[in-house]
Image (cartoon, rainbow, N blue to C red; front, side, top):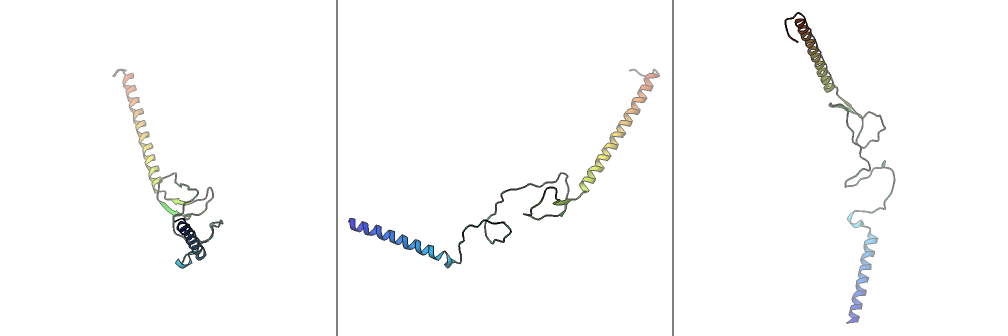
Length: 133
């Protein structure tokens, strides 16, 4: 019984060793794949691979004024420097807001003039003794 167990254990180790040797020597060549070690280099080289690329840093770019993007000067993944323009925003919305603000200012000025005129008339009426304070 012990001899049979010893023979089975030796055959198991032998089979595992042969399987490892076959898989290591073929390097997956029969499936059309080849394996390379990891290389560290710049990203200027073209690599053909499948999967998801996760960047180390992500920058959120936004505009301080609302509008429609008319021109784009950069590309996705392009390295940019501080102060470099990335896109041009249309100024139609800004012009519309400016015109609206100017109209609001004129309306407020008209209200102020009307209030001054009304205050002057009331003061005149009170001074003549026709009204009460």
